[in-house]
Image 1 (cartoon, helix red, strand yellow):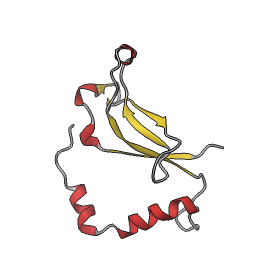
Image 2 (cartoon, rainbow, N blue to C red):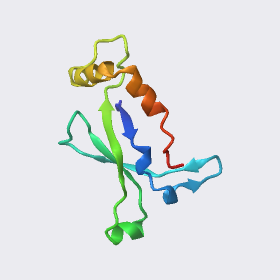
Image 3 (cartoon, rainbow, N blue to C red):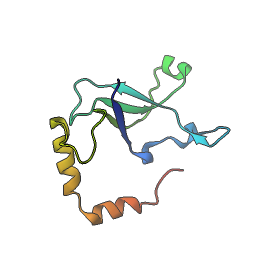
Image 4 (spheres, helix red, strand yellow):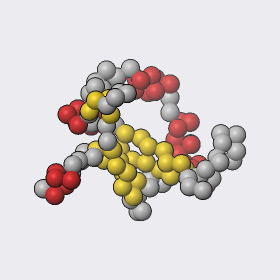
Length: 110
């Protein structure tokens, strides 16, 4: 059974021109690229997808963020796996004003 991948992206780095309208909403294609030597337990980088023609021309998509493979079956009340203890400690140290400020940013590009 495979693990879950948790993805975090910076929406301000999204190229709005690459958003497209589908039948059920507005979409953005992204790609997760493995980074075996990533820092902070990050296992993938997340980039905005580009067309094959653009890739052939050497154009690369914007790096939007990173992803981390999370062990399946881990629940909040369980003891976290050792690799996740640092991340949980950092999240618990986060203060309410910082979180509130992030939630109230109006510079989202869409």
